[in-house]
Image (cartoon, rainbow, N blue to C red; front, side, top):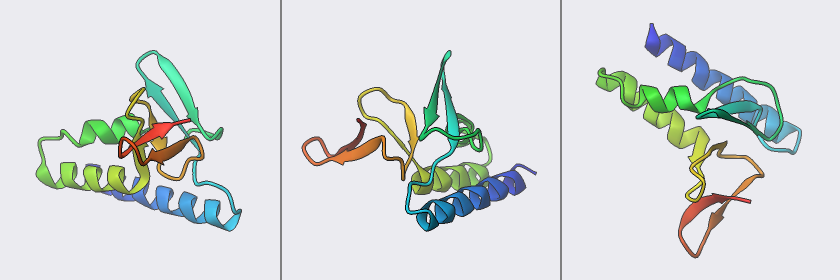
Amino acid sequence: MVMMALEGLERVLQVEEVRGRRKGGTACGWRVAAGSEETEGCGGGSLVQPAMIEALERHKSSAISKRASRIWKQHFVSCALCKKSFSKHSSKTHFCNECKCDVCS
């Protein structure tokens, strides 16, 4: 059942990415709950919470953890400085060539 849910989330993220490309913008629209603080990714509704996918990366089933890890790597990044999660296509992050990591603006 968890695998089916992950498959659905992955499809939502893929559709969101395509919509972002069609509009010429970024593919975001999810909300991140980090601790007691809530941060919006690119200002949109709440579609996918990266914290849930991160938690599934530590699932006891290796198939579930591998799928969650693949989804995370394809669609999300964490800022190396503040550790907040962002869509990989967010305009709020960029790759820093000096420290070779993703950082938020």
